[in-house]
Length: 147
Image (cartoon, rainbow, N blue to C red; front, top):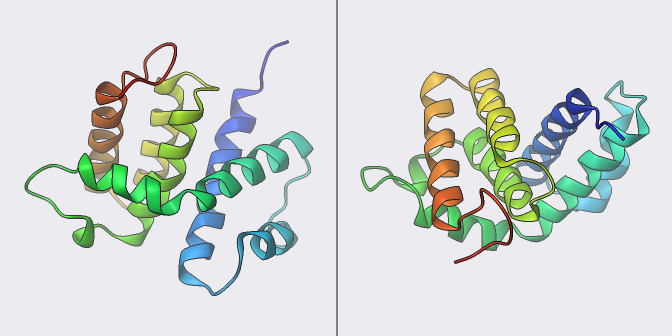
């Protein structure tokens, strides 16, 4: 069965958008997944399910993912200097990378594209660098996650 890659790309975008809402608003992940879809025109149930699963998992592991992100930021940068867009993109991306359900290059490419779209080229470069460092250090290219 061939997967719809554009659907996964849309799902990643929606998961990031929900993560952004989680961090800036005072709502629970359950409240966000319940109300988010009222403002978004998406009829593909597989996209909605994927986005909800990705967001919920990332929301449950924000602190752990933030620790990982902090460990792999360039030495001349700090977590506090990062914008909320970059942090939220990375939180969802790290969660998905460790799930290893999709090729790492597709995951990284989609999240770098989101950083470029919702921020700028420097943000995209930062997101790419952090995700590549995490991928290499945890050997996420193939098979099981190693530390």
